[in-house]
Image (cartoon, rainbow, N blue to C red):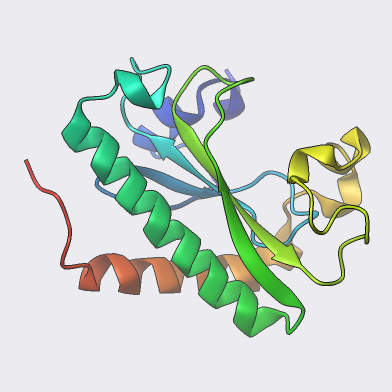
Length: 163
């Protein structure tokens, strides 16, 4: 079985190679595609929840707090790596994958004019399968920077929610 068929289970078993860190409410992973360098996803640990509203409030709040930490880590790392960094967008959709997850999208001034102010989902579908922007060794530096930022933020977070 390919780890992509069970991303959360593979993360829990230590078999998902995209994991950056395990947080209280989820697994922070770097995206398979990097047409916007630094793209990450937070995978909720709750395998039974198909939507955010199905999670107990305590777990939902923890997941959202962890999405904030990951977004801040992506912002810090991408701002340092690329002076054209603009902002971070957070999407929690669930339209394709029936498990709770949050997309963390860095946005850049160098994006095509018609797309830079629009949702990432309007990019051509080829962006999602282009081998030149697939996650690879060339992303190791950014990946390390995001991980370092995330761990520092998580360690210093006074709002951690514990059961």
